[in-house]
Length: 393
Image (cartoon, rainbow, N blue to C red; front, side, top):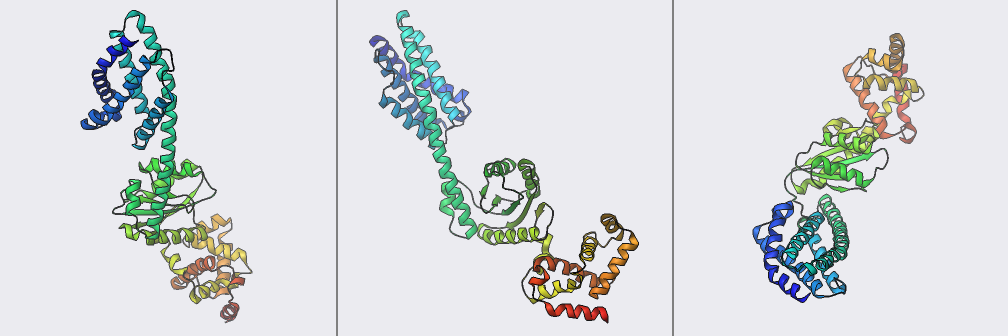
């Protein structure tokens, strides 16, 4: 094979140029590379593979690729993966190179040399491609794992208000301008990969998300209600979410705290699935401040504690916007029965739903009861006496 080796060695420079040109024309990844990169690093890599093929031609009946050759291929493949070269682009380059090598063999080989040279080429591909694929995949997995670690660290730094610039550079994430901080609550725990895939697909970018704390960071003014609707469909269960906007990265920690408080309120109040902001629960947020005011407001309805059907009637009446017809329909009672129950509420509490100011107080008291907890945990023994006095008066 020495003569064939010499003939192929004389063509290697031309072969490399042909393979580079075809890679640029047929593989989109290489077509997008700068000309200097194609003629520099890419051409050097192709020439190195040609050198391995030349050694295989000279190797007689031995193994086409020795352990040292495979080690070099594995090293190159791992480096390509670290440089974010897609595996399909790497395989395309090897196959284009093999085709060009074979075409050249048919031009320079003697009839008696061609079968052996073709066998050497196939043997090289058989040995090289599995090693290349495995090395590339292993390097990608390591890189992906490291990327996830860096991205988690970046999100943690942003949420905590710590320096994040170096982490953002390593993660290749631009952290500028506005962001939406979104906290999620699921009825059951969906797979983290499914949630991440849904968020990434909706936004078109890899979303920073803490899958333990269930909080995500979206750049710009994202369509959060649309995202929640998409997520519900993908995970197959209702989703509650709370969003808060930060105008600059430094405001992300306060936005995260706001989103967390809103989500907590939504869950405690039993609000239906969907997306909420602070403005959607502004009154409830203010009422939720701990203190005597919340306790005393909740105690306004303590006289109804022994009449759960009255509390339920009052709750539905308020949720239906004080609409008697809709309330009666939902409760499946006659309008006269509803009127009687509402009159009993007025008698027991001393608060008249027909008086706008007192109706607003009752509405706030209903919210306060949820936020303050059951009466026997509020320590308000004196307040039932006051309500009773109002009833007897």
